[in-house]
Length: 326
Figure (cartoon, rainbow, N blue to C red):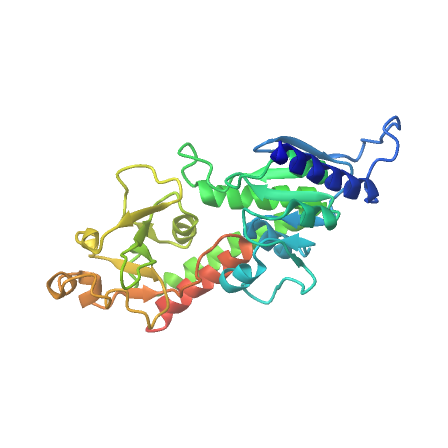
């Protein structure tokens, strides 16, 4: 009973805030002009905007990054400190007045409603109540990890969500420009790398190990990392035994045996030797070809592409570390 009352009270707060919004419909019997409406299909259905969104709340980093690439700023976003640590790539930054809405997946609905957004964008792996969000503002739910039928799922999602954000913001031409800039960056990087002696066959590792726990992952062909690297000329030799939804396979260091004949990219800082934590015996380590022949390239701890800005940063990082000793 108490839970029902608290939900009812929250709905009253949300509805009162929405009613005060300048975008609220004052008369439900009014005939609306839908000639310029924007219909957006997404994971939870179809959302119709009566005009391009201006006050946008994003509940996942990638969509905030995409807004910045489009030349727009959200009014609110979750975990801004985390975004600034992991994804704040290049010269395009979040404005200081963007409201931090707390942790990802756990934003407070009252805080969202207080911003009076005209659009909310979230990811489907967060357990928000779509109907409650839609009571606050039109809501779009997107799917960053779309499943086995999408062989380059993460990358395809980035491109499609740039297009969706462009459509929602009335910036479709800018969205096309952003996507074209990515293609130009791939072509430029590929030409530069072709002039090097790099072995284009590779595996890529991300290390979350601590002194007590081994937590290492190899990227699979469905990861955005792999798709981008392929676009600039590389070939991922690691093939998982089963489909990995998140584009990563948890491995032990010994699993690298047999995959060591080529290039190893490591998502970690250069000074952090992932093999110096007592995770592997000297005999095994000294038998790994990429270790013996110095074919390990450290990309940095935050060299992970999610949206278009971090993708451009990732490309630049790969080219830089590969060519620095050429």
